[in-house]
Each structure stands twice: as structure tokens, then as C-alpha cells.
Image 1 (spheres, rainbow, N blue to C red):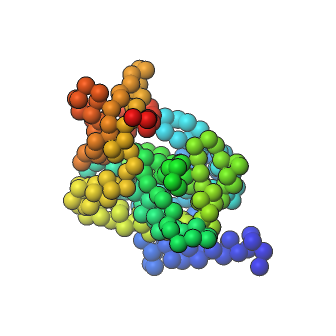
Image 2 (cartoon, helix red, strand yellow):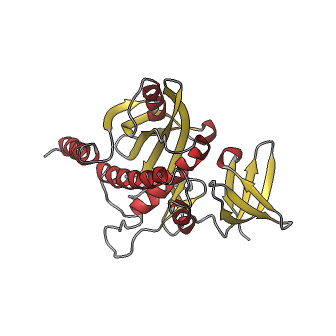
Length: 282
């Protein structure tokens, strides 16, 4: 069977298992090309698209990252998708947890992945707030952008965009980046998406059941266990050319990073206030 037909069959099989009535997702659409899956789902949200809609693009040429950084995904190498969430049970002020939950879903879904030849699972961790780190060198394997958008009828919705380096060859990766393939993990994009969506739906359900209380839902503890930033000496770049140096001590109940500065004082920073966080040699 030609690879194109084989992959089409895999996407169709995923839709059968992930979408209601068998799965927890309302809709899963796969398109060949788009500018931005986040932009497309934001427009769909305003038009009334249902909670837990998923949009996948084989090629995205106007993707956006944090702080309006742009990027392009190569066809068939990366997994680029967005999910639309309408967590009515969660107070709006707690929606900042959405990208952290998505990051946690990536790690939980992949922490049992194993290289093609080897028994040890690939090392997977989180860099606060939501970058996926893979391998012993902890290189970036995925990124997330979460946005609160017009949900139609005067309400709001969440769109969470995720880009995962699945089959990008090591020679084509940017500095500091990695992919599942570069970690010797051979897994198809439909399989990876299925794993992530199943995990994300479960964590999202826990979050909603706890009315957005990440600690009560067990999400905060799960995030802390998998966050490689904690315990590290960090340099936090803030707007206005300000800088905070210190040790990352904790993640608080609101998902913010708590840093003990060189003067001993504790400073709490939110993802929206940070330009960049780097781990530095102590």
C-alpha cells in the first residue's frame, strides 16, 4: 500500500477512535495546508464550533509562537494542530493553566516512548511554562501557544496550538531543537496525535471537574514532578530589558514560576510577563 494511502487510512482510523461517540473529541479535521491552525480555529470558535474541536495541518506556513514569533512547519515531518476548548466549568482567571496542561499532556503521552533499539524510555520533561524537552541534552521537541479568543455569543473560548517535531531529521533541526526521530523514536504522526489527544482530554476533564483548581485536580503535582526548570539556576528576561537571576524554586497554584533571586527575595512571574527563561550554569 503506498505511504500516502497508508497515512490517510491512519488518520481515518484515528478519527474513529478519538471522536464521539467512541472518543472524547467532538470533531477532528485534517487539512493539507493552512496559514495558522490557531487562526483558523479562532475564526471557527467565533462561528460557534463545538468544544473539543481539533484541526490538524500537514503544512502550516504562518504559524505563530509566543510573543508573535513566526515559524513554518515542513510537510509530513512535524505534527501541527490546534484544539478548541470551552471550559465553562473553569473561571476565566484560571484559563492560564491551559498551556501548562497541554505541555503536561505532551510529556505524559511521550514519557513511555522507547527508541527503536533500546529498552530505556526517551527522557521527556518540561521547561516552564510549556516547552517539551526530549533526550539527555534536554533539547526542545515541541512548543505551545494558547490564546483566549472570541467564543461567539459574547463568550470566550480557548485555542491551544501545538507543534511537535516528529520526523524532522537531525541535520535539519534548528540549534537547540530535537525531534522524536532524532531521539531514535519512530512513531507516525497519527499515532503521536492519538496519544496526545487521549492524554489531554483526560487532564482537561480533571481540570474541569476541579473547577480549575489545578492542585485539587492533581495537575500541579504532576507538572512539578516533570518540570526540569525547577531547581535550576535561571535567567528570566522581562519586558523593558529587565532581568531576573536566581533559582527556580516552585510553580504556584496559578502556574507561575517562583524564583529566589540572588538577594534571597522571592519573585513570582507569569508566562505572559516573561520574554524568555534560560537555564544558566551555576
